[in-house]
Length: 120
Image (cartoon, rainbow, N blue to C red; front, side, top):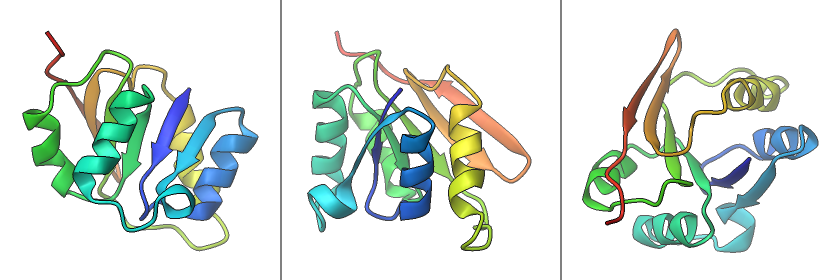
């Protein structure tokens, strides 16, 4: 799958997803300091699923219709230790294939998914 890791996404998780065969771009290395709107535009333009811990994307998600190949995964969970964070996050993301087209919230014991508004 194609992902765009927000600037706040851990580097170990980016590496773990890449090692699992996913195409992952990372704002921290590609465009640090980007505004949230610019990050979302990049996800749309490149047809990527945004990975973030930033709750501001919840509001942006409902104001910006996304193409079907895009989605947003908001993580609202405590972080694992530095040694395991990459594998934990990569396992959650790699464990499903229905992320596109959804705004998803990952919490410690559940994942909530809502269909995103679509581009007309």
